[in-house]
Every structure is written in C-alpha cells, then in structure tokens.
Image (cartoon, rainbow, N blue to C red; front, side):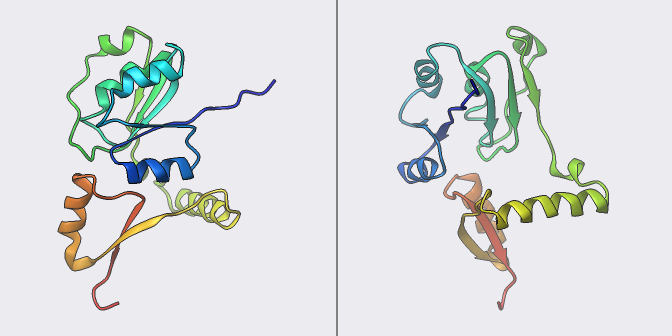
Amino acid sequence: MPLVPQFIGTVSTKEKAAQAKEDGCHHVILYKEEDFVTRVNEITSGKGVEVVYDSVGKDTFEGSLMCLKLRGYMVSFGQSSGTPDPVPLSALAAKSLFLTRPSMMHYTITRDELLQTASEVFTNLAAGVLKVRVNHTYPLSQAAQAHADLESRKTSGSVVLIPDGN
C-alpha cells in the first residue's frame, strides 16, 4: 500500500492559513496562537514528522527541530524572522537528525544546470504541477520596503520587484 503524505503547514495569520489550506495542507497551525510543537505532536500521535521545511528562521527553528521524528530531516531555507541561534551538534545527535541549509546558487553553478532547472520549472508550471502566487509587487525604487515587509512577514506568496516606469 503506497504511503500518502500528510502536509502540516504553520503560518502566522488567518489569511495565510486560508492560502495554506488552498495549497493542499491537510492541517494548518497558527503558530502565533498555539504551540505548534504540541499541535504537531497531537496530529502525529507523538511520532513527529519526517521532514520540516522552515523558511521563518529564528522564531520557529528550535520548535521545528523538536517536531522531527527519529532520523528526521530539516531544511532551513529562509530566515524572515532573523538568523537562528547556533545549534550544537549534540542537539541533532539526540534523534540522529539531519539539518541542511541549501543555497540556490549551488544548484545552478553552470549554465547547463541553470537551463536544465529552468526547463523543469517551466515544464511543471505549464503542466499545472506548480502554481505561482504573486501577491505583492513593488516598484524597484521601493525595494527597501519590500524587504521590510518580507522581514516582518507581511507578505505571502511571491514578491516581485518591477523596474520603475513599467
């Protein structure tokens, strides 16, 4: 029998919760209103999750590690709330956890890699496998405001800077 993944999303606002549900999350947790570690444990019957993808950083990093099951994987790919505190290796060893902080530039080092990756993305966009939500656009002259809004988590979905005059 194939495994069917259950997606748990953690968000900061009710608006983002609605988007997470729309995007396919089976469970959505408002982490500013309830302890997401406790809620994840309830949802998983205390087993924890296989993988955490954390884009928030400082505010959720430690809790995200706590949500992982034995030999779980954590992918930290953003830090909108700030840089997480350093993690001693012993914190990972307690459950044989894996932690990675990938950087996009390491996956597109050569032009061939960039073209291959772009081709896969655009093929999946055209097929409807991937969906892009552009909720916020800013003139390039307001780049500082766009960054401030990202850091304060006032945004969701993609943020696009548009050259001035267009």
